Length: 114
Length: 116
Image (cartoon, rainbow over all chains, first blue to last red; front, side, top):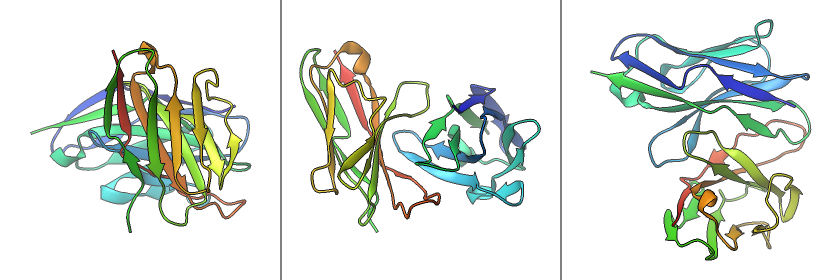
């Protein structure tokens, strides 16, 4: 079975500062990894995904994440955040075979302050 | 292209009452998912359909929850009777499953259920 741990429930940061949202996963098989963003009263939107290949993945809105297999991590980073990045961010994992059932972390609330 | 549509967006009911949620997936998407999202948590899969067949309903509490996707397009999720602990957001998602490869899930805005 797979599991996901998001290490920070809330991350406050000032506008234009860099941010890292941490995610660790556990799995006995090869996985796909994802980051989703959820704005208030909206559904989830895919930010980026790692399926295979380069371990540095670039996504929308200037976000990127790095897959580290030895540390079983998939941390999300942005070099300079905007007020509009304030949202809930979810890390997720799925097996790379058979139905691709997705397991989500509990979420990290990113709060960007002016 | 229209996204995943869910209705109602908000629902308030008293405990022991029935409630139903409706989802219309993106046109052409053969896979439909219902997720439960409790406050402060990530979504948890309730049921997954491939066309009209429920291929994973292991997390659906079958004593009070039921779902259907009769024509392989839109879907209804029902709770009867509702309990206080059912208060949550119910998310629907869809994807185009080509078999053997990853396909992005697209999420609707959710239905926020409050049980009083």
